[in-house]
Image (cartoon, rainbow, N blue to C red):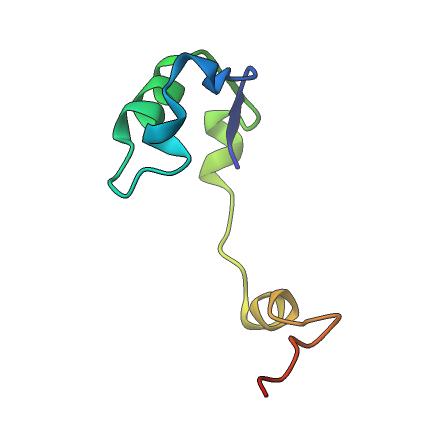
Length: 71
C-alpha cells in the first residue's frame, strides 16, 4: 500500500450496482480513483523498496487455523 484515500460514501451508488449486481461495477472503482489520495511512501522511498524473499512469502502463507474439512 503506497497511498490511501479519505473515507468514501457508497450511498451515492445504487446498491443493486455494487452489492447484488452480477456485472462489474467499474463506476465505483473510478469514483474511488478520482477522490484525493494521500501518499504513504515518497518517490525516493519507493525506489528502494524490494520484493519479498522466499522466507517472507512462506511466512505469509502460514495459517493459524486450518479451514474445516469438507464432509
